[in-house]
Length: 311
Image (cartoon, rainbow, N blue to C red; front, side, top):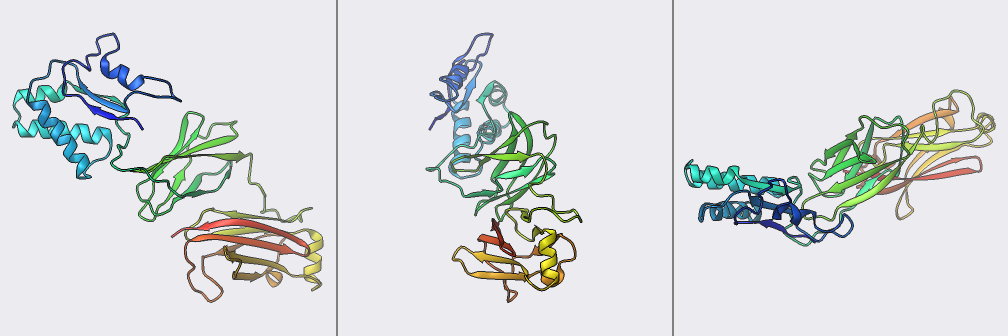
């Protein structure tokens, strides 16, 4: 882990055309092996003796009392505390105006050993998708970002339940993968990749019988309703109509218990249809958050998809 530094010192941040001490400290090493400071607050002038100590006290108080956790929030409020302490005296103002933040002011500073987050999301997405759901179990205000290479295509903060829907804007084309990052206070950053498909994995909206059956679910994870789209072949349609076979959708929990069943035989009007599951079991009881499995069965064809129910 890298330190963050408040320098009560003279001219360490004096960027006069050459790299100053603060600049060197935050750029030391490489991206893969950084060995400098995470962020550095340093002055570009000769600081006076006492006011910077008051500013440092104000900044540290913000951190230790959990009033702020970003570098910018801590340093800026520390400077405001110094100005207020001196009642607007020019000495406090001068120190604040020449005390500069080097590094990323939005970075969250840690006050404890960072813990791992449990992040749930689909591992693939259609190129035409307009949003993407992410769950960070038990953590509110986690920042989620989606990137295409270095271009940010969407971001948002999780709500009190740990869920967020990211609106996707300016999706570059062509591109085959999105990168997801999740950061939160005193948490280990989460990094992963999401595969982009040219269109939905299964186009289940056609009224023309398909040559292959199939199953697709969305959104995944979900918190309210899960759309289960299934597709059958012409032969399977005929067998259903002649009562030789039925078509089933079943939902299992992680223990393998059937929690919800749909008998689709009487409801199949088209070879592609959608069923919505609201997270209830067969008795109408709300199921707890967790992992569930959707199984589609038609004749001797079977397909299973994993889904995550969030609360």
